[in-house]
Amino acid sequence: MPLRFDFVVLGGGVAGLSFALKAAEHGQVAVLTKRSRDECNTHYAQGGIASVLAADDTFESHIEDTLTAGAGLCHRDAVEVTVREGPAAVRELAALGADFARRRGGELELGREGGHSKRRIVHSGDITGREVERVLLSACDDQKNITFFPDTTAIDLVRDRQSSHGQGRVLGAYALTPAGKIETYLGRVTVLATGGAGKVYLYTTNPDVATGDGVAMAYRAGAPIANMEFYQFHPTCLYHPEAKSFLVSEALRGEGGKLRLRSGETFMERYHALGALAPRDVVARAIDAELKRTGDESVFLDMTHLGRTFLMERFPNIYAACKAFNVDMAVQPIPVVPAAHYMCGGVVSDLDGRTGCPGLYAIGEVACTGLHGANRLASNSLLEGLVFGARAARAGAEEAKGGAPSPGGVPDWDAGAAGDSDESVVVSHNWDELRRLMWNYVGIVRTGKRLMRARRRLDLLREEIREYYWRFKVTRDVVELRNIADVAHLVVECATRRKESRGLHCTLDYPERDDHNWLRDTVVSREP
Image 1: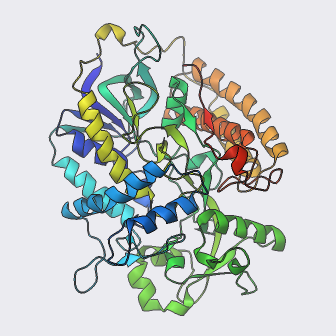
Image 2: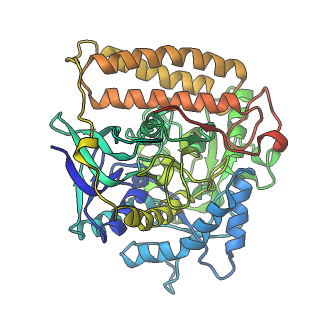
Image 3: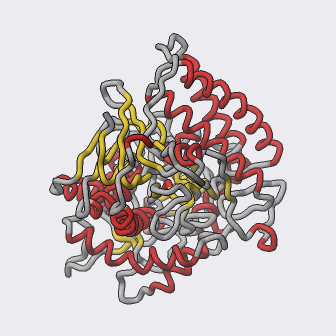
């Protein structure tokens, strides 16, 4: 029998938990997380939450910084909503017990990051995401209307097969339980809060759960997807064979860190007036260009002039992680390289999180609200999750007042003739090949020829994966492989369509920005 709730939330990061906490005041909430409850991109966010809280800061300044970073593609209404509703969201988080850094007088200590004209980053040292996750989980635990289902992998969205016209309403999701069974989770409202898709690339700052599940499921259900060509590569990840692309926060550059070549020469002033504090797309491309020019394996982030005491107090987590890999950032520069970090496109959604599929909402990194445009401004992501989680909960509560889905409209899971696999090597091989070809052909700098090669190989891989998916019983590995293949297809499709360079999409075939023809979103959808 299906499990029935008022709200089904897929994902347990800042957006999903913010939604769950508010929605629980109006009904029963199920929160499905693919692994443990706190294993998500939010948990690993280092920098902080951008918000206008200083006396010398203004909403207009934060809005303009966001619009500038977004390279002309931000939707101004989404930017204004996020910025103007941000301070209240931050204060509410603090009231729940978030331990934000404060000065001696008790006021919040605000940091600065690339692309920001003011100090406006609320932080908990360099583990802000972990603190946000802790506080929200604790608050959810105090709410009796919220039930968590950890280690539960969403497979596909459930749609109403009795819909008489148009797009069938989304009724919930099929999911693989820890016991290996496939259960149906039904809700009056279904919320995608599944985060990003960094694992589509070979090198990423993201945890293993970031396989683009929400985007892939929404695409298969017929929801419009937009701007997937704009994948942000974080400029500074620790370069070490055992570090698994450990993120070195932008906040280090905000506090005066200098980017140097192996020779000791600084180089960012050649690329942007803000130097090392330029927006991420500029810094990542600059580093990529310098590595190609010099043949070096990394550049270096120099913090040595700031002193050991300051570094240990301001960046205790990063300091300890670097030290574990024999890099003492107090006396030696940190070797860094870019890695896939943040998805600026996603499931098209409005200012309340509604998507093109009735009954389906998308919030956080999985959504494309227009906030980020062609490039995300640093530390706007946790802010987005807080603001849109609350907005979607208000809208979803109104929608949930309608009737529950009729039992006849819920299709059972069909396993077909699937059996146990004796060819699991197919999964691991295709997983590696797909991520490698995306890194080599659809990375920081692209060409039409590289995209064409990627498309041809992806078509073959997706067919192999589709055949394997239907022949054998579903496992989490197969679900994730199927999803990153669909996400890769969307990235290549959007990148192929955009005949210009803008923000995070840089193509050597069309090196200039073209506002006349391309000042618009790239939208892709399929028939459900």
